[in-house]
Length: 508
Image (cartoon, rainbow, N blue to C red; front, top):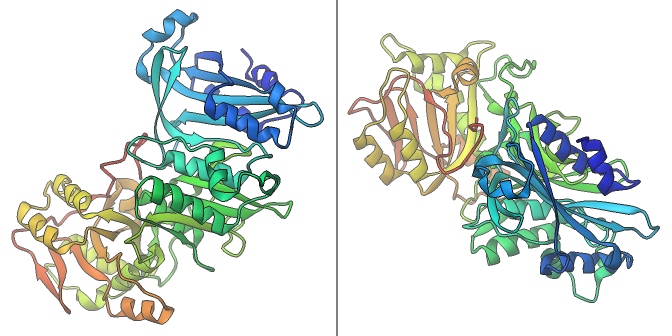
């Protein structure tokens, strides 16, 4: 089977890059069998989509055809063999709509698709879910991957597609399929379909949709937060993605129109060299220095694409990003990182180097003082329960772990949710995936002005506690107290990984 020939059967004279991307991934992932099925166009959701397009392209009503193609890693040749395939045999599926355009030419749209997370080197996908599909009207298969869809260019645009991908990937109790027309019904009156055609959505409209479906429909208390002018988009997107929050990236295109894509993960190159990775006389750097790409779903070009993490592609002057966060999170990741960075910069004053001090604490302090050395900071939001589970289950490099008395004490100190800034050294981070210390930073403090933010950072008012080799320091009203009994781990520990999130490969 030639995948190009298969694509031609759907495309006609047009070219659908997203369809080709799907087929290319199937070749790379070793697909052995393709199952092709016609779908009932009278299905309510499918009929609604055809009706919406027909407002602009009347020929769609008669010419529309729906097909589902499904890919399996197991090899079989008869429909009767489908029920006997392992549940994990399905690699991907796609529902494809074809119809005749205004000039009679064939149009193809990948209306819905889920591809299993590919095992690509150094790729870490955070935004995915389990989707179930019934093949041959009798056998259900699960595909764990990131939901993808394509705009049709008539009744919806790229912003609709980006929103639909975010909403359908969201970890609701059961993944709810949100259709394009559900979004349109929220945004437009039934008698105003012309408002959709050829137009993008405003930032306010995007916010309204996210608030409606994740707040009103899913019953979550959420806030839609925007990156700030001059803020590093790389750091903003990474912190939110690693915290489990959906992120939409907005950027200009060559035709002066904006484009919207969901960011679903990142790559990590532990051998990367950039001159700014180890800046002279700088105490700390973000771990995003080793993130060389962000993984996104682009409805124009396909799923699991890598966008280079460079100023050329992610200029804060031209691009924008918005994230959906819990309503109680008032501190942005940028502020949390600055608070951690200020603490790190004060280490040499707080911890005077002396004989007998724990080795890894000494290394941490020395890294803030020595030219061409630095501390790596990784910042993300975490819950108290998950963090305590992490501390209680992980052993340090010497085989020790945090004991129950300290876990009980921390459970009374820590907020329900907080920003966690992990501190480590470049070589430990890239070779061991280990950290030396943790800084606990408030997430619920409302800070309005830059002056207020600066004052809170300098005064350490955002710091709840920090765990260092051999000791825990915690805030008690306006003072910090130190506890070291019973003995605490003095070695380095594995970096945090979300115990609730199903990932393949593991998240970095």
